[in-house]
Image (tube, rainbow, N blue to C red; front, side, top):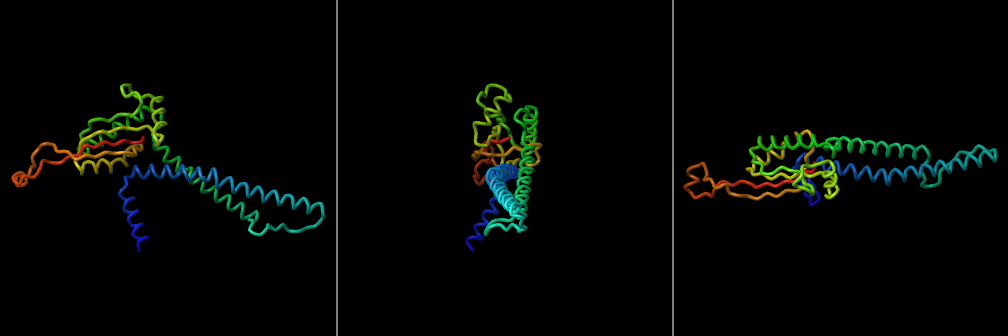
Length: 234
């Protein structure tokens, strides 16, 4: 029962993650899995196949010298040639699938040298924020020389100085709760991936009295807004 409850809790947490964050997670997982296959599984399988081919070749040479026709039989626990080739083909197919998924997700990130693409993404984020009734205070690239416009060199250097290995955009805005939720849901509709990797949300008062007169007379505090700060990997 505890195990089932644990899985249910994980499923609920996953459903609460935005599409952009899921895409980034899957992309990272594909990179890890592709590396694991390429550096561990594939070399081991390939080496095992080479050993089988080598042993079979030596056996056939001894067979030829002796003039006897004896069928080669692998040792106990050793894969035969047909099974080894099938396992290797299956591993190669899995590796190709992971590489294709990695390439698909990578293509949705802006190329580091594509400043026009980065500017278009900033424009899309601005329009999405405005449509979500958010007031943008700051929307800028994070790099070492903040007083200069971004260049491919600055963005490449900045991407190497964070754990995500991608350029980062900083958004500071003021929003209500529902507007923020609309904004986060809308990230999946952007032309490129803008994956939230860090956020800070603080409740503040806008100083205005509630629109409802009864609430105002009851002494209800002023309407609450959110100061939002989000860093996006792009």
